[in-house]
Image (cartoon, rainbow, N blue to C red; front, side):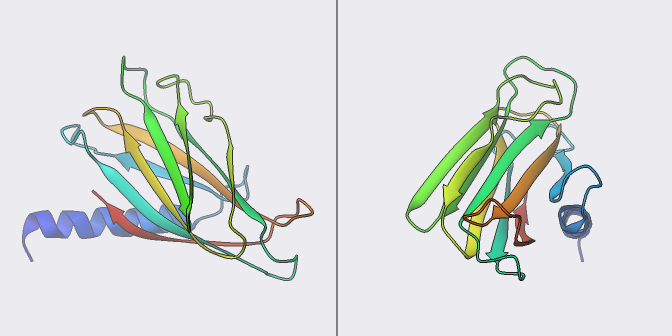
Length: 152
């Protein structure tokens, strides 16, 4: 296996572990470093969040937000897009490196898989975190799983 391929495999495995972990402060929050070499302006992370009834009731919607955990850099922002069926919404952490979350977005799509895309506005390494929660119509957290599809 070529060195580049090994590094991609290692990075993907690390992201999968991170995105599958539960943060103590939030039910579903995960993150890593995007474009650690700082040279890929079009870097895109792609994951599927699956919402399901874990006994708390079926999902009504997904709530999501993103935050940039790196040092501030002019013009370098982190974006999150969420797509389910024929619906899409996006949010941006509009202050580079402030460690505050973007405005939370809500997309109504019920149970099933939601596509999450995370990217940035220009080349440069960015440490980031994504918060994602499947919620019932009665505002109860329900089954939430994530699977990373691409991180490059």
